[in-house]
Image (cartoon, rainbow, N blue to C red; front, side):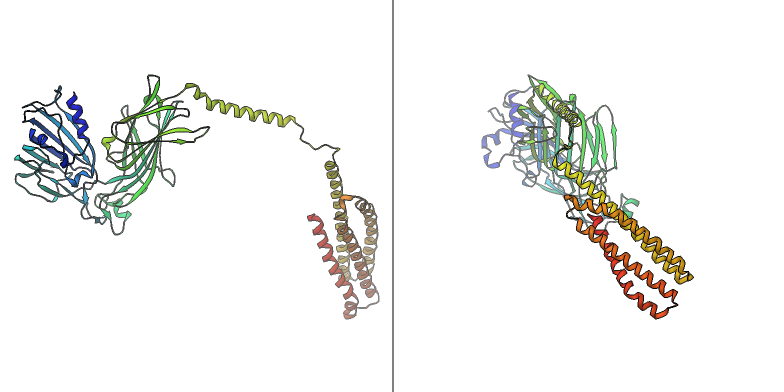
Length: 585
C-alpha cells in the first residue's frame, strides 16, 4: 500500500511545472480520461477518472496533477482514490491503475452581468479547458459539463461538442499531447443563491457533566450578481420566483441526531422564522433570515445547540478525546475563514490535535463562571472551506476526575459562608450602647425635635385664632353686630394668654439644651414675631370696633386701619418663612 500513500500525499499538493523531470513525463501515459464538471451549485466540483499506464521500463511511484492558473487560486479541496483492491509498491512496466480525483473549487463562477435588478435572472460565466491539462500524453479524453438548467446563453463550440438537456459534452478527443489546452467558456442561467460565510466562528464547549454546547457565529453575504435598483417587498411576496429568483430565502443546517436546546438569533434578539425536524440519523434546522438576501446583501446571526456528551467524547489509553465534525453544518455554504474553538474543562492538560487536513493551530484561555485559572481553548483556523471539509477531527487531553468536584465544592462553600454570615448577623447585637455619648446625644436631639414640634403646633393654633379674628371683622362689616365682635376678641385674648403660658416651659427647655443651640434663635424669633402679630391684630380689631361704635366709616376708617394692615401682612409673611425654615431643619 506504499504506492497509494505516496499518491495521496502528492494529490494534496500543487506541483510547479518547472520541477517536473523529463523521466517522469515520458514514463506515464493517461490511456483514458473522463472528466465531469458539476455546475449545479456555487461550488464547482470536478470529478476526473484517470487510467494511468506505465509505458517506460522503470517503476513509477508518483503521478503528477496540474491545474490551469485560473483555477489553482480557487482550489479548496483535492482528494484521490484508487479503484484497485491491492497494489504493488510501484507501477511496473505495462501496468495500469485507475484513479478517481475530486477537485472542489470556490468562487469559480463569476456573475455576468455583475449587477441585476430584482426582476432579472442571474447569469454566470465559467471558464475551463476542454482538454485535460496534464504533463502526460492522453490517448482518449472526454468532458461533461452539467448545468442546473437547460437554458444556456452561450458556450464555446469545439469539435465533437454536443448538448443533451442541461449537459454539454466535449469529445471524445484522442492522442492529445502533454499540456494540451483548449479554453472554453460557458455562460448560463443559475438562480442558486451564492451564500458565502466571510467568517464563521464555531465554539465547542465540553462539560463533563454530560453536555457539549455548540455556538456558531455567522457573517453571511450573498456573493451572486449584486442587486441594483429598488427592492419591492410586495412584488417579492406576490411572485417570489420571478421577482427575486436568485434571492437567498433560507438556509438548511444538518445537525447531529440528538441535538437539543436549539436557538437561532441575531443582534436584535431571537428569530422565530425557523423550523426543526428530527429523525434517528440527523436533526434538520431550516432558518430564514429577517429579510431575503439579494446579491451583495449580508446578514449576521448565531446558531446554538446542545449535544449529549457520550456521543462525542471517548476514552483511549488514559486520555479523553473529542471526535467532532470540522466544517459548517449548513448545506452548500462556502466559508472564507473558519475558526473552530474547542473549550476544554478547566484542569485539562497534555493536549494534542489530529485533523484530516492541514489547519492553523493555536491555544488560548477562556474565563467562565466559577473558573479559577481559566479553561484551555484549542483554536483551529482554515480558509476556503467547503462541505467536503466537514470531516471529523480529534482533540486529545488528560483530565483528573477529581477536578469535577471543584465547582460543586465552590458552590457549597459559598452557600455555607453565606448562611453562617446570616446566622452571625442575626445573633450579634449591632445596636449602639445606651451609655455612649453618641446615643445620649441622639436622645437629647430627639427631645429637642419633639419640643420644637410642640412650639410649632402652638404657633399654628395662634395663627388659627388670628384667622377667626379676621373673620369676626368680616361679619361686623356685614351685620354691624359690635357686641359679637367684642366677644370674639375677648375669647381670643384668653386663648392667647393660655398659649403664652404653654410656650414658657418649652422655651426654657430649649434654652437649657445644648442640642438646640443652633435652632433656638429662630424659635425665639418665631415666638416674638407671632406675639407682635397678635398685638397688631388686636389693635386693628379695636380700631375697627371703635369706629363702628362712633359711626365713623368710609375713608377715615381706612386711614386709621391702613398702618395696622400693612404691618399685619408683613408679619404674616415673616412668620410663614420662619415656620418653613424650622420645618426643614
